[in-house]
Image (cartoon, rainbow, N blue to C red; front, side):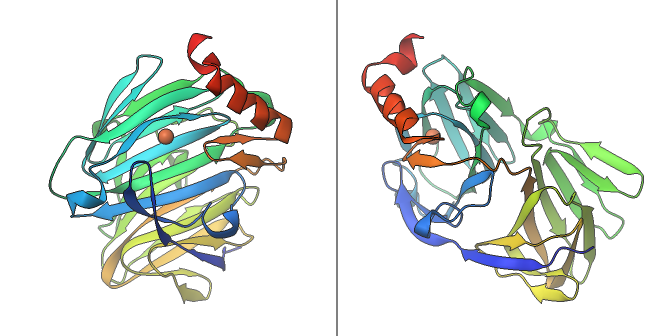
Length: 284
Ligand code: FE2
């Protein structure tokens, strides 16, 4: 069964960090989410004034942050001593768990900076696990060339076609995330199996894209939530298309969010604030 477009959540212009301009779709207005996805920000600018201020030191608890750099260079540093350069085509997969304090600062003062930051929730039983951090360079992300001349980059989960499955570098996560970046030449089609248990959405970056059966236009700069089914069908228009596909198992757990802390109860949020204010993110 082909998944059709169910809801379109437009990316709304906003700013975060020390004044980085971005578009927030999931997690934006009315905090609309798609379990287990909490938030999706797209940053895309050629104007350094939109990004140079970066994201100085700030905490997270209770979920994972995934940064995918389409273009540009940022430096991640955290209180555990991790340091990582996020460069064009690279991914940073950070499990905040019980707590991490990090900064993400641009390492460029001109040129384009484009990419995404995605927040994926952790199940209640994993929210207080130790923080973890993975830096995935562009050469460690498999890129498949399609018969139609298009390409698929596999960041998490697997690209599956007929009897073939190509795994990405991120595996073993409870929510079983799928994260693909797909490029299609003009007037070509793409299919990907997405098991019916997963919640799924598409974000169109460039060109013209249609989704579903029958095909419907998929606007750019929006989280396009897909309905029930087990197959994604996409078609590029006359100028081709680039889009990302995200899917994961929903948690069906209560969410209480206070800024960068996402827990299950208000008491756990109060504990997170107290722990942060009393330096307990750093010392344990
Ligand atoms: Fe952060």
